[in-house]
Image 1 (cartoon, rainbow, N blue to C red):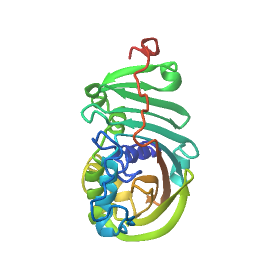
Image 2 (image 1 turned 90 degrees about the vertical axis):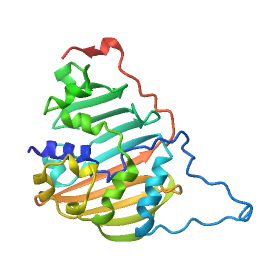
Image 3 (image 1 turned 180 degrees about the horizontal axis):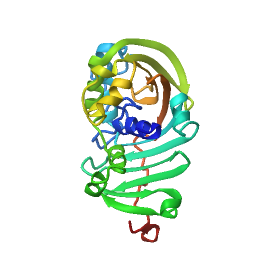
Length: 272
């Protein structure tokens, strides 16, 4: 498998954001806030400390309360450099206001080719730079899945259940540590460092990976930066694949905002 294809496959499986690439189905991004009861009214209470036992529940629930978000991902390390994916930023907008038909927009540069994809009403619009003259080809999910070269695009557009994905990592946690604070986007965040054993991961994030890929992966170190609502502001994943390091850093923002994801105009669509 080509190096760039390996990275795309990992991204499609959610392993490079460790289950944090989806939104929930709530209608209000403040749904996780709770009103004070009569006994606590007027008294500020600090949230309970996140522990290994509560991490999955707290972080998963926080994401379920939002329907939209923006992600900026970057890759570094020897594997990213060998695959021509180091240095550049990969922006993605996700809107799961309608969980049955989520909208998504993303772009990336793979080995010098500019790729972008928009998903609206379960229709995929994919631009491959010069190959499509800067315009988009239009395809259904069935058409993408029938083409092995395009199947990863369909997987990357899935709107996964973030809580279910995190639950798939529960038994794979080798170590857990509250590792201080940092600043992301001007706001203070709490850091949590986890070491995961990929061989023990279950659920959708590994079901679509080739067993050979999983066998080649060593332990993963993941540093979560969580905001005051327990949502990820940044996730950094470091892994080793066949002796080459890959570092994925994803920053999350615009929770609950209108992202304006629309299909390209008709004059920007070309026949396959």
